[in-house]
Image (cartoon, rainbow, N blue to C red; front, top):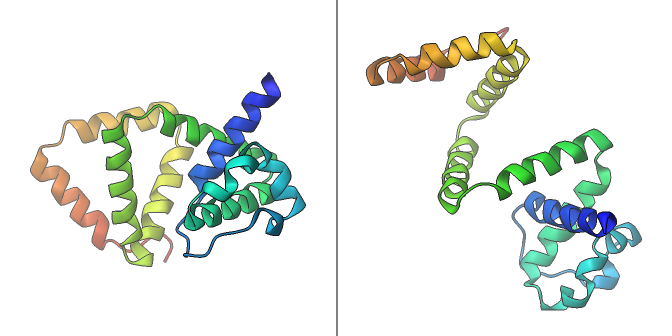
Amino acid sequence: MMKANRLVAISAVLLALAGAAGAQGVAWQDLSDAQRQLLAPHEQRWSELEPQRQQQIARGAERWLEMNRRDRGQAQDRFEIWRGMSDEQRAAARQRYQEFRGLPPEQRARLIDNYRRYRTMPPEQRQVLRQRFRELSPEQRQTLRERARTRPPPGR
């Protein structure tokens, strides 16, 4: 039972990891042995999937197989968070992701760097920053956001 649940979870993570794809499908026999083994629960309905979906899942399986144990665990954790979101929360997350992808590379790099620095702070310090941000007026928040957009990345 635990193995079946794990396979379902892995399959779901693969679906979540899948990115944009082209129009041609992937025949089941064209998958690698490792991909077929990983995706075995979907073999019966594989031919019923849209060609684009087949490519997404095949690429997701390939990425999954290349991940180490830690990365796989993190991907599963993120998928569990995703599953716990409402439709509105998922739509908002998709929108924020599209906005992020539309930023110039230097702004994306700055945001990623800021997030990494934030995540390495002690929890107490993160709490203080969150509280200080909550206490700002909408105008102050906007000014802070504008400054963050135009400030050069640290160390560059």
